[in-house]
Image (cartoon, rainbow, N blue to C red; front, side):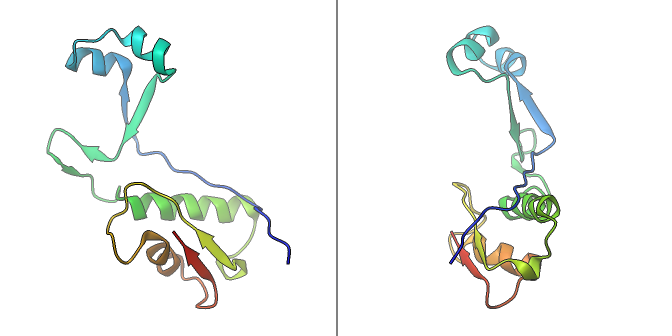
Length: 116
């Protein structure tokens, strides 16, 4: 049996929070964040102004976008995939896990395995 990764994909939520933004909210120097952590910005799917998730930006929504980008990058159809491996620390639900949700969203074969 040969196992290979033939394509990768990613998705970033459009809502950016820079170190300068954090410096306006918290009493911290934005340059210090960059120096200590090496991070200039982060992306959030959560709407902190309204205290709710942004529609279409749940973990499974972002996972689907990344998976479709990976399929396109690899030049393969979803029916060609034997297994899905989905990792996250912020699933939409505890059960069913996000890998099964992604499997269904993509319309994968029932024979394709889904791992979380």
